[in-house]
Figure 1 (cartoon, rainbow, N blue to C red):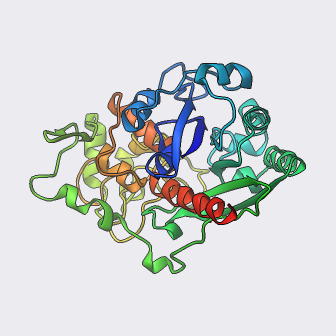
Figure 2 (figure 1 turned 30 degrees about the vertical axis):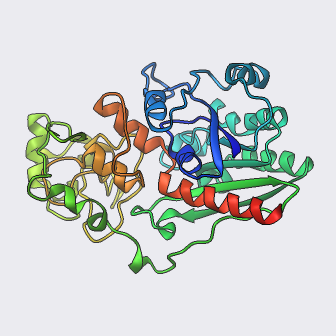
Length: 360
Protein backbone atom coordinates (compact mmCIF):
# COMPACT_ATOMS: atom_id res chain seq x y z
CA UNK A 1 0.00 0.00 0.00
CA UNK A 2 1.07 3.59 -0.60
CA UNK A 3 2.04 5.38 2.61
CA UNK A 4 0.07 8.58 3.21
CA UNK A 5 0.49 11.39 5.75
CA UNK A 6 -1.84 14.29 6.47
CA UNK A 7 -0.81 17.73 7.73
CA UNK A 8 -3.63 19.85 9.19
CA UNK A 9 -5.56 16.59 9.33
CA UNK A 10 -8.67 17.88 11.11
CA UNK A 11 -11.31 15.25 11.77
CA UNK A 12 -10.15 13.17 8.81
CA UNK A 13 -12.12 14.51 5.84
CA UNK A 14 -9.28 14.37 3.34
CA UNK A 15 -7.65 11.32 4.91
CA UNK A 16 -10.90 9.35 4.77
CA UNK A 17 -10.75 8.87 1.02
CA UNK A 18 -7.24 7.42 1.30
CA UNK A 19 -7.98 5.42 4.44
CA UNK A 20 -10.99 3.77 2.80
CA UNK A 21 -9.12 3.03 -0.46
CA UNK A 22 -7.25 -0.32 -0.52
CA UNK A 23 -4.23 1.19 -2.30
CA UNK A 24 -3.34 3.63 0.49
CA UNK A 25 -2.43 3.52 4.18
CA UNK A 26 -2.46 6.49 6.57
CA UNK A 27 0.82 6.35 8.49
CA UNK A 28 0.86 9.82 10.07
CA UNK A 29 -1.33 12.82 10.81
CA UNK A 30 -0.87 16.13 12.58
CA UNK A 31 -3.19 18.89 13.76
CA UNK A 32 -2.94 21.56 16.48
CA UNK A 33 -6.73 21.41 17.07
CA UNK A 34 -7.13 25.20 17.13
CA UNK A 35 -10.76 26.28 16.95
CA UNK A 36 -10.11 29.86 15.78
CA UNK A 37 -7.10 32.11 15.29
CA UNK A 38 -8.34 34.14 18.28
CA UNK A 39 -9.26 31.21 20.52
CA UNK A 40 -7.43 28.88 22.84
CA UNK A 41 -10.24 26.36 22.61
CA UNK A 42 -9.66 22.93 21.11
CA UNK A 43 -11.70 21.44 18.28
CA UNK A 44 -10.86 17.94 19.62
CA UNK A 45 -10.60 16.88 15.99
CA UNK A 46 -7.76 14.46 16.71
CA UNK A 47 -10.11 12.32 18.79
CA UNK A 48 -12.45 12.04 15.82
CA UNK A 49 -9.59 11.29 13.43
CA UNK A 50 -8.44 8.44 15.67
CA UNK A 51 -11.97 7.03 16.05
CA UNK A 52 -12.43 7.07 12.27
CA UNK A 53 -9.05 5.78 11.08
CA UNK A 54 -7.26 4.18 14.03
CA UNK A 55 -4.36 6.62 13.54
CA UNK A 56 -3.66 9.02 16.41
CA UNK A 57 -2.60 12.46 15.08
CA UNK A 58 0.18 14.31 16.85
CA UNK A 59 -0.89 17.63 18.37
CA UNK A 60 1.75 20.04 17.07
CA UNK A 61 2.10 23.55 15.66
CA UNK A 62 3.12 22.93 12.06
CA UNK A 63 4.47 26.46 11.75
CA UNK A 64 7.09 25.63 14.39
CA UNK A 65 7.95 21.94 14.36
CA UNK A 66 10.69 20.97 11.93
CA UNK A 67 10.01 18.35 9.26
CA UNK A 68 12.72 16.24 10.88
CA UNK A 69 11.00 16.60 14.26
CA UNK A 70 7.65 15.56 12.80
CA UNK A 71 9.30 12.64 11.02
CA UNK A 72 10.67 11.48 14.36
CA UNK A 73 7.28 11.74 16.07
CA UNK A 74 5.67 9.69 13.32
CA UNK A 75 8.52 7.24 12.93
CA UNK A 76 8.24 7.85 9.18
CA UNK A 77 10.79 9.15 6.68
CA UNK A 78 9.83 8.96 2.99
CA UNK A 79 6.15 8.71 2.03
CA UNK A 80 4.14 8.20 -1.14
CA UNK A 81 1.42 10.80 -0.55
CA UNK A 82 1.61 14.02 1.48
CA UNK A 83 -1.63 15.91 2.13
CA UNK A 84 -1.51 19.49 3.38
CA UNK A 85 -4.84 21.32 3.61
CA UNK A 86 -3.56 24.47 5.30
CA UNK A 87 -6.13 26.69 7.09
CA UNK A 88 -8.38 28.66 4.76
CA UNK A 89 -9.81 31.29 7.13
CA UNK A 90 -7.35 34.06 6.21
CA UNK A 91 -7.82 33.59 2.46
CA UNK A 92 -11.63 33.45 2.53
CA UNK A 93 -13.63 36.26 0.95
CA UNK A 94 -16.13 36.00 3.83
CA UNK A 95 -13.76 38.10 5.94
CA UNK A 96 -13.45 41.61 4.49
CA UNK A 97 -10.15 42.16 6.28
CA UNK A 98 -8.58 39.46 4.10
CA UNK A 99 -8.82 41.79 1.09
CA UNK A 100 -6.30 44.07 2.82
CA UNK A 101 -4.23 42.12 5.33
CA UNK A 102 -2.06 39.14 4.42
CA UNK A 103 -2.10 37.28 7.72
CA UNK A 104 0.63 35.07 9.07
CA UNK A 105 -1.36 31.85 8.79
CA UNK A 106 -1.35 32.21 5.00
CA UNK A 107 2.36 31.37 5.07
CA UNK A 108 1.40 27.80 6.02
CA UNK A 109 0.67 27.19 2.33
CA UNK A 110 4.31 27.81 1.48
CA UNK A 111 5.47 26.09 4.66
CA UNK A 112 4.15 22.86 3.16
CA UNK A 113 7.13 22.85 0.81
CA UNK A 114 9.52 22.31 3.74
CA UNK A 115 7.72 19.05 4.49
CA UNK A 116 7.68 18.07 0.80
CA UNK A 117 11.46 18.47 0.61
CA UNK A 118 11.93 16.31 3.70
CA UNK A 119 9.43 13.50 3.04
CA UNK A 120 9.89 13.42 -0.74
CA UNK A 121 6.36 12.24 -1.57
CA UNK A 122 5.42 11.03 -5.02
CA UNK A 123 2.12 12.90 -4.69
CA UNK A 124 1.28 16.19 -2.96
CA UNK A 125 -2.33 17.31 -2.41
CA UNK A 126 -3.74 20.59 -1.13
CA UNK A 127 -7.35 21.77 -0.89
CA UNK A 128 -8.42 25.27 0.12
CA UNK A 129 -10.87 28.08 -0.65
CA UNK A 130 -10.90 29.43 -4.19
CA UNK A 131 -9.12 32.62 -3.09
CA UNK A 132 -5.94 30.66 -2.40
CA UNK A 133 -5.47 30.35 -6.17
CA UNK A 134 -7.20 33.48 -7.45
CA UNK A 135 -7.53 35.89 -4.53
CA UNK A 136 -5.62 38.84 -3.11
CA UNK A 137 -2.94 36.66 -1.53
CA UNK A 138 -2.54 34.10 -4.30
CA UNK A 139 1.25 34.59 -4.28
CA UNK A 140 1.50 32.00 -1.50
CA UNK A 141 0.12 29.29 -3.79
CA UNK A 142 2.00 30.61 -6.81
CA UNK A 143 5.31 30.36 -4.94
CA UNK A 144 4.47 26.85 -3.72
CA UNK A 145 3.62 25.72 -7.26
CA UNK A 146 6.79 27.27 -8.64
CA UNK A 147 8.86 25.46 -6.02
CA UNK A 148 7.15 22.16 -6.78
CA UNK A 149 7.78 22.50 -10.49
CA UNK A 150 11.42 23.39 -9.86
CA UNK A 151 12.05 19.95 -8.34
CA UNK A 152 10.23 17.89 -10.95
CA UNK A 153 6.55 17.88 -9.98
CA UNK A 154 3.78 18.19 -12.54
CA UNK A 155 1.10 20.41 -11.00
CA UNK A 156 -2.61 20.39 -11.78
CA UNK A 157 -4.70 23.11 -10.18
CA UNK A 158 -8.16 24.64 -10.51
CA UNK A 159 -11.29 25.74 -8.69
CA UNK A 160 -14.51 23.73 -8.93
CA UNK A 161 -17.96 23.79 -7.39
CA UNK A 162 -17.99 20.49 -5.52
CA UNK A 163 -21.68 20.05 -6.28
CA UNK A 164 -20.41 18.98 -9.70
CA UNK A 165 -18.82 15.93 -8.03
CA UNK A 166 -22.06 14.94 -6.29
CA UNK A 167 -21.73 16.86 -3.02
CA UNK A 168 -25.17 18.14 -1.96
CA UNK A 169 -23.72 21.58 -1.29
CA UNK A 170 -22.65 24.62 -3.30
CA UNK A 171 -18.99 24.66 -2.28
CA UNK A 172 -16.30 26.27 -4.42
CA UNK A 173 -12.86 24.93 -3.58
CA UNK A 174 -9.36 25.05 -5.00
CA UNK A 175 -7.49 21.80 -5.47
CA UNK A 176 -3.82 21.19 -6.20
CA UNK A 177 -2.50 17.75 -7.13
CA UNK A 178 1.23 17.59 -7.80
CA UNK A 179 2.94 14.36 -8.91
CA UNK A 180 6.65 13.71 -9.21
CA UNK A 181 7.85 12.86 -12.74
CA UNK A 182 4.31 11.94 -13.89
CA UNK A 183 1.73 14.14 -15.65
CA UNK A 184 -0.84 15.26 -13.12
CA UNK A 185 -4.52 16.05 -13.60
CA UNK A 186 -7.64 16.72 -11.54
CA UNK A 187 -10.74 14.53 -11.34
CA UNK A 188 -13.34 15.46 -13.93
CA UNK A 189 -16.64 17.03 -12.95
CA UNK A 190 -19.40 14.43 -13.28
CA UNK A 191 -22.51 16.65 -13.02
CA UNK A 192 -22.47 19.60 -15.43
CA UNK A 193 -26.15 20.51 -15.16
CA UNK A 194 -27.02 22.40 -11.93
CA UNK A 195 -30.54 21.01 -12.16
CA UNK A 196 -29.01 17.57 -11.52
CA UNK A 197 -27.13 18.55 -8.36
CA UNK A 198 -27.92 16.50 -5.26
CA UNK A 199 -30.23 18.37 -2.90
CA UNK A 200 -30.90 18.81 0.79
CA UNK A 201 -34.01 16.64 0.40
CA UNK A 202 -32.02 13.85 -1.26
CA UNK A 203 -29.58 13.85 1.63
CA UNK A 204 -31.32 14.46 4.96
CA UNK A 205 -35.10 14.20 4.55
CA UNK A 206 -35.10 10.70 6.10
CA UNK A 207 -33.80 12.16 9.37
CA UNK A 208 -36.91 14.24 10.01
CA UNK A 209 -39.40 11.43 9.40
CA UNK A 210 -41.40 9.90 12.26
CA UNK A 211 -39.07 8.05 14.60
CA UNK A 212 -35.97 9.89 13.36
CA UNK A 213 -36.88 13.49 14.08
CA UNK A 214 -35.57 15.58 16.98
CA UNK A 215 -36.43 19.02 18.35
CA UNK A 216 -34.06 21.88 19.14
CA UNK A 217 -31.97 20.97 22.17
CA UNK A 218 -32.52 17.23 21.72
CA UNK A 219 -30.41 14.24 20.68
CA UNK A 220 -31.78 11.11 19.06
CA UNK A 221 -31.65 8.13 21.46
CA UNK A 222 -30.25 5.82 18.76
CA UNK A 223 -27.72 8.29 17.37
CA UNK A 224 -26.31 10.88 19.79
CA UNK A 225 -24.68 12.66 16.85
CA UNK A 226 -28.13 13.42 15.45
CA UNK A 227 -28.34 16.35 17.86
CA UNK A 228 -29.31 20.01 17.53
CA UNK A 229 -28.70 22.89 19.97
CA UNK A 230 -31.41 24.63 21.92
CA UNK A 231 -32.20 28.33 21.50
CA UNK A 232 -32.49 31.35 23.75
CA UNK A 233 -36.13 32.55 24.03
CA UNK A 234 -35.59 35.41 21.56
CA UNK A 235 -34.25 32.99 18.97
CA UNK A 236 -37.16 30.61 19.53
CA UNK A 237 -39.41 33.49 18.49
CA UNK A 238 -37.25 34.32 15.50
CA UNK A 239 -37.05 30.77 14.20
CA UNK A 240 -40.81 30.28 14.40
CA UNK A 241 -41.34 33.39 12.27
CA UNK A 242 -38.88 32.46 9.52
CA UNK A 243 -40.77 30.97 6.54
CA UNK A 244 -40.25 27.30 5.75
CA UNK A 245 -38.10 26.07 2.87
CA UNK A 246 -35.71 28.94 2.25
CA UNK A 247 -36.90 31.83 4.41
CA UNK A 248 -34.46 34.17 6.16
CA UNK A 249 -34.22 37.08 8.60
CA UNK A 250 -35.71 39.50 6.06
CA UNK A 251 -39.18 38.17 6.93
CA UNK A 252 -38.81 39.02 10.62
CA UNK A 253 -40.60 42.01 12.13
CA UNK A 254 -38.26 44.81 13.22
CA UNK A 255 -38.89 43.89 16.86
CA UNK A 256 -37.12 40.54 16.31
CA UNK A 257 -34.25 41.73 14.13
CA UNK A 258 -30.74 42.14 15.51
CA UNK A 259 -29.09 45.58 15.34
CA UNK A 260 -26.99 44.86 12.27
CA UNK A 261 -30.16 44.03 10.34
CA UNK A 262 -31.63 47.47 11.15
CA UNK A 263 -28.67 49.66 10.12
CA UNK A 264 -29.83 52.43 7.81
CA UNK A 265 -26.70 52.18 5.69
CA UNK A 266 -26.98 48.42 5.27
CA UNK A 267 -26.49 47.39 1.65
CA UNK A 268 -29.68 46.01 0.02
CA UNK A 269 -29.52 42.24 -0.04
CA UNK A 270 -26.73 42.03 2.55
CA UNK A 271 -26.64 39.18 5.07
CA UNK A 272 -28.93 37.09 2.80
CA UNK A 273 -28.26 33.79 4.56
CA UNK A 274 -28.06 34.58 8.28
CA UNK A 275 -30.95 33.13 10.28
CA UNK A 276 -31.84 31.36 7.03
CA UNK A 277 -33.46 28.02 6.31
CA UNK A 278 -32.05 25.54 3.83
CA UNK A 279 -34.10 24.86 0.70
CA UNK A 280 -35.35 21.30 0.26
CA UNK A 281 -34.86 20.99 -3.47
CA UNK A 282 -31.52 22.77 -3.80
CA UNK A 283 -28.03 21.94 -2.56
CA UNK A 284 -27.08 23.47 0.78
CA UNK A 285 -25.11 26.70 0.77
CA UNK A 286 -21.44 26.52 1.79
CA UNK A 287 -20.99 24.92 5.20
CA UNK A 288 -18.35 26.63 7.37
CA UNK A 289 -16.85 26.03 10.82
CA UNK A 290 -19.57 28.32 12.27
CA UNK A 291 -22.37 26.06 11.03
CA UNK A 292 -23.53 25.45 14.60
CA UNK A 293 -24.74 29.04 14.93
CA UNK A 294 -27.93 30.21 13.24
CA UNK A 295 -26.58 33.77 12.93
CA UNK A 296 -23.71 32.72 10.67
CA UNK A 297 -25.42 31.21 7.66
CA UNK A 298 -28.33 29.31 6.14
CA UNK A 299 -28.18 26.48 8.67
CA UNK A 300 -31.79 26.18 9.84
CA UNK A 301 -33.70 23.05 8.86
CA UNK A 302 -35.98 23.58 5.84
CA UNK A 303 -39.14 22.93 7.86
CA UNK A 304 -38.34 22.06 11.46
CA UNK A 305 -37.78 24.85 14.00
CA UNK A 306 -34.20 23.89 14.73
CA UNK A 307 -30.71 23.98 13.30
CA UNK A 308 -29.75 21.17 10.98
CA UNK A 309 -28.36 18.53 13.35
CA UNK A 310 -24.71 17.51 13.56
CA UNK A 311 -25.48 14.28 11.72
CA UNK A 312 -27.47 16.06 9.03
CA UNK A 313 -24.72 18.65 8.60
CA UNK A 314 -22.15 15.90 8.25
CA UNK A 315 -24.17 14.21 5.50
CA UNK A 316 -24.42 17.50 3.63
CA UNK A 317 -20.64 17.72 3.97
CA UNK A 318 -20.20 14.29 2.40
CA UNK A 319 -19.45 12.18 5.48
CA UNK A 320 -20.63 8.57 5.81
CA UNK A 321 -23.78 8.21 7.89
CA UNK A 322 -21.93 6.39 10.68
CA UNK A 323 -18.88 8.66 10.93
CA UNK A 324 -17.76 8.62 14.59
CA UNK A 325 -17.45 12.27 15.61
CA UNK A 326 -16.04 13.02 19.05
CA UNK A 327 -16.16 16.06 21.34
CA UNK A 328 -19.08 18.25 22.34
CA UNK A 329 -21.73 19.43 19.92
CA UNK A 330 -19.91 22.66 19.03
CA UNK A 331 -16.67 20.73 18.50
CA UNK A 332 -18.44 18.47 16.03
CA UNK A 333 -20.01 21.35 14.08
CA UNK A 334 -16.57 23.02 13.89
CA UNK A 335 -14.94 19.79 12.71
CA UNK A 336 -17.50 19.33 9.95
CA UNK A 337 -17.26 22.89 8.67
CA UNK A 338 -13.45 22.81 8.65
CA UNK A 339 -13.19 19.51 6.80
CA UNK A 340 -12.66 18.42 3.23
CA UNK A 341 -15.81 16.46 2.28
CA UNK A 342 -14.94 12.73 2.51
CA UNK A 343 -17.04 11.98 -0.57
CA UNK A 344 -14.67 14.29 -2.46
CA UNK A 345 -11.53 12.81 -0.94
CA UNK A 346 -12.67 9.37 -2.06
CA UNK A 347 -12.85 10.69 -5.63
CA UNK A 348 -9.38 12.24 -5.26
CA UNK A 349 -7.88 9.04 -3.85
CA UNK A 350 -9.30 6.95 -6.70
CA UNK A 351 -8.06 9.47 -9.26
CA UNK A 352 -4.53 9.50 -7.80
CA UNK A 353 -4.46 5.70 -7.68
CA UNK A 354 -5.49 5.55 -11.33
CA UNK A 355 -2.71 7.96 -12.37
CA UNK A 356 -0.04 6.08 -10.43
CA UNK A 357 -1.24 2.67 -11.59
CA UNK A 358 -1.24 3.72 -15.24
CA UNK A 359 2.24 5.21 -14.85
CA UNK A 360 3.78 2.08 -13.32
